[in-house]
Image (cartoon, rainbow, N blue to C red; front, side):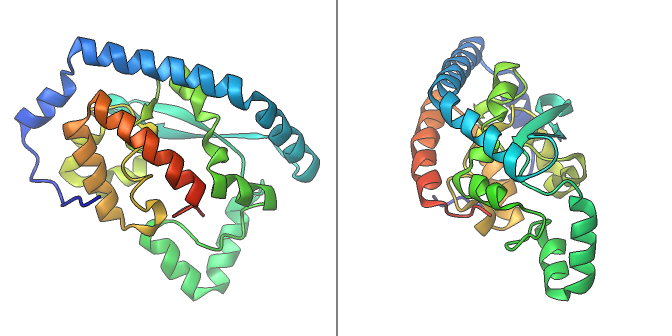
Length: 225
């Protein structure tokens, strides 16, 4: 999907996004609840297997929650299956100090292709995107949507510049344009362009198209690490 950087922010565009049509908002919320509930029911046996496997192979909590920025700038605890060792901060600091190439990669977009913090099961969960399944409960609580920009942390807001208003005009999602457009294989600038394009043109039809393409992206594992 070809996405060009968005035009400079205009108050009128953002205001329209913030005043979403009540019917569209209702349909989106209804779809979110129905899909989230269905996923929980279908994946329940798999979730139990993941919980047991994590408890047996990696000490520490099963779930990890990190505060993320949501709609209107409100922060919330975004849940994931813990995919890293419990002392991840210390492991990362040591790794970056000993590996200049890894430090340069980390400074680019705060991600590592070969991340020493990730556990063996965590790597499998990331490759299959199963680490993000607990965000279904964020959806049920109304903090996230099935489709939307991926939730960011507060120190990433500056990277969105004036487009942060577009990002905050919608709920963050479990999947979105970034997820089906290369994910971690894309630049952060393109991620901002994709999030802004979604916020300015979101619709039920676009959400459904993204959901379908998400299945293909998950099966291919493209950009997941």
